[in-house]
Length: 461
Image (cartoon, rainbow, N blue to C red; front, top):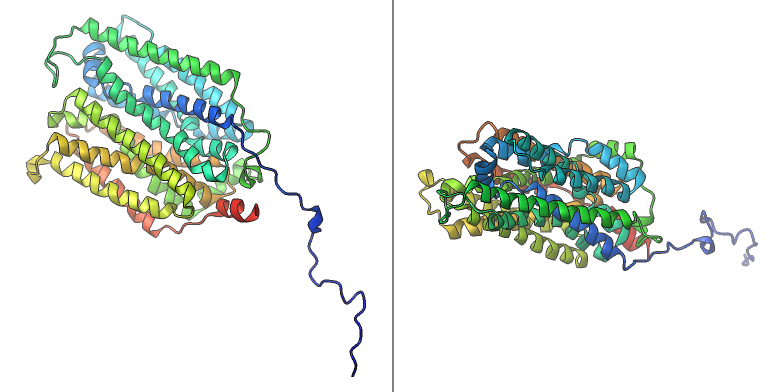
């Protein structure tokens, strides 16, 4: 039999592409220099929100002396931060529907109003205390946007090889603000005579004037930032920086349902929210925890300051590493929480000198507490990036809103229990250690995925 020439119809391909290759339009992407200004303004607001939230813990001895606060009052002042997170669904809806600008402006307005309310110099201490409590609550209402919008900002404005770094800066700067409160408070406000570390007599009026000066300075800085954001803070650039930034996302209702039905997400959300929530409440009353160990208000402030600053610096460094070496977020987190578990145990055992008879020196407390802050606080941006990768295409703001709400929920529960068990605080150290071990176990059994990274790396190519 001889070969027969094929017809034109037989030479047609069996599998026909849905669209001709010539009609495929590449996704345009571009990064703008103004992204650094947007990140800076957002970060400065986060810094001030953290600074205002942690105003009273580092100067609790002086605040008790001037305003007649009790230890319960100090715990409640810290607790207003998590309480302000209760309407988080409203802020997530506003962020999803109206953009980051509208949500951030509302949060900045709450911060200005709260800082102004705290600084009203009323003579009646009863009403003055209520004004301070109200101001702390209003500052807490800024938390849902400030704490959860960092990954949204980084995806919207930054290229894939800068996203983790931008997320780290935006999410950790609030921790740096609370760290500076440990430094600014004790240095600007002297401790009363007769307390640990006080060698000079200070009368009540002088201490009150110094506290008032700090409050006035904070309200001035927040007002300046609010005006700057009001004049210029765009929600998004004209051209998105990546394929993921330009892709279609799920609706608000679909996103909530997807998150609550995703067991892998709930697993990693608990691994994040339990230790970060516990360490936030623990750090907010660190001065009270260290007072039985004969640590002065100033020394406790320095311990808290370096523990958070170390976490911020290490967190940005690890996020930069994650930008270069992609697909290793779980391994980084496992190593971090193995170190956090050991450091928390090291801090807890010397504090129980009556049972363990281990030496509790200033060097031991400094080192162990700083290591706890480094390992836990630096894990925040890595966790946030892992959340986005796990549940993509759920919008970043909604995903991070859920997990930061859970973190604040655990902070609030811890501080609520503190109002009943205020006399002996060693149980807080055991909560910290247990939360780190619990998170480590969840991370070991977690199965990671990188859906957004796949879209940016492979689909764009």
